[in-house]
Length: 142
Image (tube, rainbow, N blue to C red; front, side, top):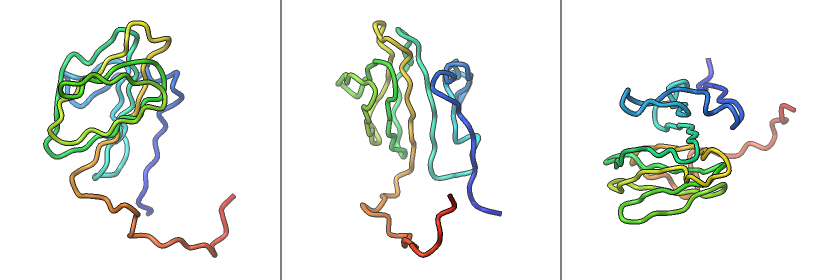
């Protein structure tokens, strides 16, 4: 058996239809904790869609987890400690441990704000992955 797993989260237009979260207090429409559907244990991914004017309604920080937010659609803002950062398609934000964070879809957003959040632990990654060697003599499968 191979060590991989696959799930389908659907097109961006369907993200709002999912209801999910980590705990009941933060479970809501448009939130999907994708890694709960997969088999990995050192990296996590969530997919979120907020309607215009919708906000998280809470702040949080992590003590052992870094997060990378990848914004795909819509217009929003992230609160990061004392700063407010405008976000939209193509914005990528890395948030380290101890940073307070929250987010919202601005009321004037032309669409829902949609993003992926990738979570990983504190073991530093090498600048260049050093645990693999390219093998170029195996034919491509397509």
